[in-house]
Structures are given as structure tokens and as C-alpha cells.
Length: 393
Image 1 (cartoon, rainbow, N blue to C red):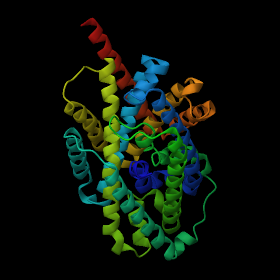
Image 2 (cartoon, rainbow, N blue to C red):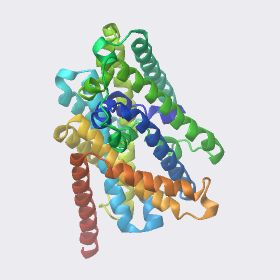
Image 3 (cartoon, rainbow, N blue to C red):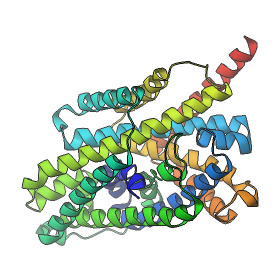
Image 4 (cartoon, rainbow, N blue to C red):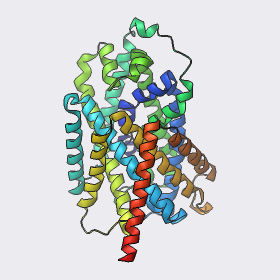
């Protein structure tokens, strides 16, 4: 549970409510349930695939084994785009809550330090995950308590919610899907990490997704209560602004600590996940073979820095969620064709996960969908070109 939550409670819960409220108003709350359902199906698929291919380097290899090289290249490109966007959103959390006056510089510095530690062999252990989860949950509980202990401002309490907004539920679900995508830390662990049995995962996966849903619903209702949907949609740091409105300014340093811990904890997983896909690409020849591990850290960090510099935090979150949803579309498609003896969960969960992943990805805001599509085309083309050059050489 600590491993899963330590990789999950990050950008979605600290910044995802603002862009979700911008597209769906208060209707972003039902969108959380749809996002959790999609995440649950995707978690089941990755767990089944890891059991079928325990030595494979992540989702890229799963897709390649089941669907072939071209879907795998598209899936790998989607995964790297998603990881870059998620990393940019996570360091955006650090910048918005800890050093808002130097957001970009702080974000790039955090990526560089995290990548350097990963290249040096630093591991985010279970003990660190337990400590991080305790800090983040404690801080979020304080935010919720303060927001519910003080009456909202009169203008928020009297706010009349217009009918438009329900049509944005799918877009809000995509943006909040980012709050649930750390489950691969337990369903498809990296080499050397603890591997959990199917019996354990039958309990751990739904409980982890359920706890994340409860936490995000509680925080979402709390910030919506204090800010209202209109002000929430404009907030770069919703939890901070909700505390200020609720006369909890004295808790801002504590909130900054919680945001920093959440960003660092999730960022380690995101960069490790991107590195894992890059390793799979080198093993199959889609990327050139390299002897040292640090160039892969440089590539994953460079993609994240590009997201920080080129995209505002809300767009980075949308691109990260869109790319991740496309990736899980391919993952669920490959899990769907697993043999019955390789399954723990029924085929219909993979079918449902495939449908929900595609619907969520196609519901992304227009700018994020265009950026993701262009990045997918470029990534897939570069991987194919590299393969052709190696074959000719």
C-alpha cells in the first residue's frame, strides 16, 4: 500500500482539480469515479502481464510480445510522452507550492537532482515510501479539516452553478486520471523490486485505488467548498488558495513540505518508469545499445525538462494524462489476448480498460491532444528510422 500510494499521490491531487474544474465545473467530482474505474482495469491488465512475462522490461515489452513491434513502438512513444508530461506536472507542483517565484528554475533543478540520484543507483525504498505517504496523507488531512472547519465565503456559498459543465466530465476524468497511475509500482515492479503474488494483489490493487479515490474526493470537495468552481478553475495551487480562504495561512509551510515530499516521491517512480521503457527499446534494437546506464537517465530527464520549459503546468498535466491513457489503451489491448492460464482477472476487465483508456485519451483538451498526437508521430517515426538505420548498417 505504501509503495502504491507513494507513487500515486502527486500532481493529480495537488494541481489536477483546477484544470478539471475549468472544463467541468463542480461536475469534476463524478469524473473521479470514472478515472478510478479506468485505473483499476489498467492495474489488473499490468498485473496479469507481469505474471505472464516476469522478466520483460515493462509495458513496451508486454505490447511487443502480444501485438508486435509497431504497436509496441507507438505504445512506447505514448508512455514516454506521458511520463514526460507527468514529470513536468510533478515538478510544477514543487514550483507552485514551494518556490512559486522561481517555478521553472526550481523544477529543472529538481529533475536534474532526481535523475542524478537515479543514475548513481539510489533506490526509493519501502521505508522511504512509508514515510512519504505518512507525511502526504497527514498534510492532506489537515487541509481537509481546516477547509471544513471554517464556513466558506458568502460569495461562494451563494454561487449559482450554471447548467453547462456536465459535458466536460470525460475531460475532467482524463485530467484526474493522473491521480491514480502509480499502481505499476506494485503491479509491474522494476527488476530488483519486491514482487507481489496474485493473492496479495487481489486485495492490494482495489484497496490502493479505493484509498486514492477517497483521498482525492475528500480534498476535491474541501477545495470546492472554499473556492467555488469558478475560482478553483483559475487557481495555480488550489490547496494553498483554499487554506488562505479558510484562514489557514499558518499551515502554508506544512503544505509546502507535503507538496515537496509528494513531488519527489512520485518523480522517482515516473523517471524510473521512463528509464524502464528506454531499456526495453535498447534490448529489442529500437534504440542503439549502450553500455552505461546514465545516458538513459539523461534522455528521461531531458524529456521532462522539455515539458517544463515548453508547457504550462496544466497543459503538461493534460499531455501526461493523455499520453498515459493512450499507452494503457495498448496495454489493455495486449492484455486482452493473454491466454486464460495467464489471467488472474477476467478478459472483460481488459476490454473495459481498453474502451475507457481510448475514451479518456480522446477527451483531452484540444491543445493537449494535438501535442500528444504530434509527439506520438515523431516518437514512432524516430524509433522506426533508428531500426531501419541499424538494419542497413
